[in-house]
Amino acid sequence: MRLKDKLAFSCASIIIAVAPSSPAQADQVRSAQWFAGYLKLNQAHQITKGNGVTVAVVDSGVTPHIDIARNLRRGTDTVSGGDGFGQKDDSEGHGTKMAGLIAGHGHNGSDGVLGIAPEASLIPVKGAGRIDESDGITPGIKWAAEASADIINVSVTASRGRPLTEAISAAASADSLVVAAVGNKSENSRLAYPAAIAEVLAVGATGRDGQRADFSITGSAVDICAPGVEIVTTFQTNKYYQGNGTSEATAVVSGAAALVRAKFPTLSAQEVAHRLTSTADDNGPPGRDEQCGFGVLNIVKALTADVPPLSPAGASASAVPTAAASAGVSASPGAGAGASTDVDTPEPAGSSLPLVAGIVAGVVAVGALLAFMIRRRRRVTS
Image 1 (cartoon, rainbow, N blue to C red):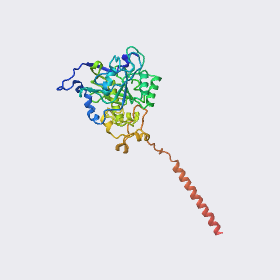
Image 2: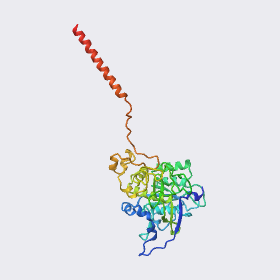
Image 3: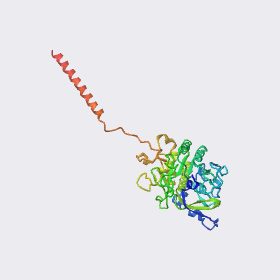
Image 4: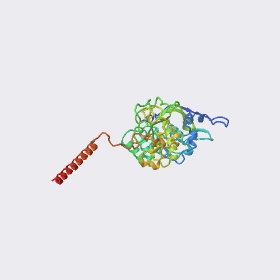
């Protein structure tokens, strides 16, 4: 698979070179991050900033940009041409873009990119590169699972097949939540892999109006949407980037998942996905739809709402059930089609056999009693 095909989930990009702002100026980069206000990040960050959570970025590698360097940890390369730690030769800048959205901490206090989880740790996994055109994304996902990453961000496409399925299974076994982009219509008309796999949280993109972006692929496996239009983030050589794509939306959701795992550390990966989808704002027909799944990401609700667990077995690890749930309101499932909420199934009401059998038994008993009394009366008379 060619590198440009793997990394095609960002489109209409603009590289921005911004000089450091003076103390009297508002930082141009930070003020251009419209989605921060839309998602109420200031309010969310009063609750948690993602400290203690690790997010693996399986992508083209991550450059140590000034706005993410503090959160960058040693990762690995699953293709040739890197430094062995996932931090060299991000030739396309794609992984660096995603890293900034997930865990950018900015610089000089309030300058530069602010990510969704600015205190989460980033583990770069270079699974795509200019030199080696083989598919390093699949082994990258497996490596991240074995490294016990809490979240695995996959804003790129991987080759469909048994190795990918096994890698996703390994992530599920390790309790790592895989968050992946559904893809853009400019490259494909079908959901990308691994987003199409049931155990993965599949992410589409919305615009400033909260509606699905035209380029965001639709399908029954879509779970949630997040801002993915005119998104400003980090780029190579301490520059910045603005672009559109489901890649960016996926990184936003991965950051939100990191916040949820930090706030609720006992939740399983699937329960984290469940909390994100069940608190999403429905932006289409009532219930789940093929455009944005359960709706648009609402980070503050995901961190504060009472959400019923996926099943009674998960109740001890979940937040307190909501009053709505106690009243019988059903909750949305977690990522993909594999998660569901347990519901008691009533017995069929259409069968009358027990009633008929009871009537027959009663008639037989009464008949036997009458026969006994008649025989007894005949003996007394004689």
